[in-house]
Length: 176
Image (tube, rainbow, N blue to C red):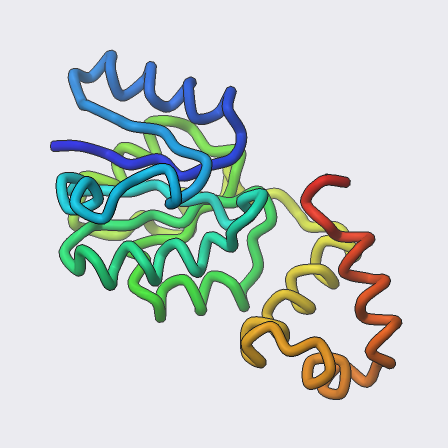
């Protein structure tokens, strides 16, 4: 059994790798799918994928992983949870969508138990999002629906294209 951890937070990746090693589970952490060869991906049985990765979108990572290895059990893990991205992650093949901070026990239970973790069991791990975070998540959802086309997304959002571009700069990963 091998677990792939795709997260741009080096400290978080290393912490998970250490926790898995304590359970005698091999885990490999990467910050981008570009760090792995296509053949290597098939050697993993499970994956933990962050939604917001510096150069990639975690939803795209899920889609790529499932296309290359359909049986892989993928868990989406994010500090910026929203219903829209949760639905999209599940549609793309994620087994579960969990929000940070999360206890390692809940992550293990979700990865290795075939029954889903009930929302009530996970409520202690859910934090309320700020209005700005909800706004950003909704903008990302609309952009995803329109394959990243800013003009179409701006039209749906009722914004001028340049206004949307300014908002996206405000929410860039480098500033968070």
